[in-house]
Image (cartoon, rainbow, N blue to C red; front, side, top):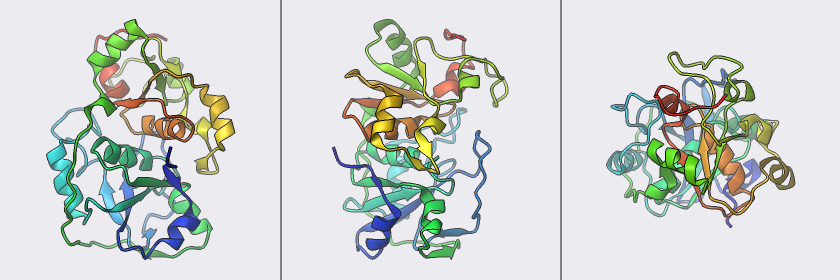
Length: 272
């Protein structure tokens, strides 16, 4: 099992590799009310991976929905990404949106992709070079998306799993949202959780903006040999829990892309 995360020190050592592409997983707003403390800085040479716009199906009423393979291919090529690119994804909040970008590349058939543990805050803390953000264009890459449908689940598949219990469904939202103690931050959504799901708040898996050690992750996640499914509010933080589980297990994994924004706005069954 290849380690899907890299350290700031590793990235610093490999900055000049000819096939390296550094992507900032851009998400201007988030439901956790986290703020970018370095809004005008980026890792030297980074390129913007705009989750909300370029890398979402903006025609879908649900937020952050997976784009088509054709859209993903075209937008990746614009960023200069090629078939042989080694991709390192980071975000400005530590670890928040970067696992989503990482998983998107996995689901589009590109395995040579990694997440920077601790993101931009860790990079700056280590004293490595940054630069001001500025518009940029790149030589067109030859990346081609090869969609892996087994890595993304829809509501029908999640509904079926309630009965079969074939996979474990983990919900990355906070406990107060999972147990309906507070209203959902998005208007019009019911409160509660998908029947049979278990609550694994993504914040419990991190310390100081980085993932906790593997032994602690094993203790928190308590994985068996079942396939794993991941959900959250809109498919972003679900990928944090997925990535944490990837650090310690080879279990088959998939994301419920519609997540609670879809489930909570429908007449599908819920628990509180």
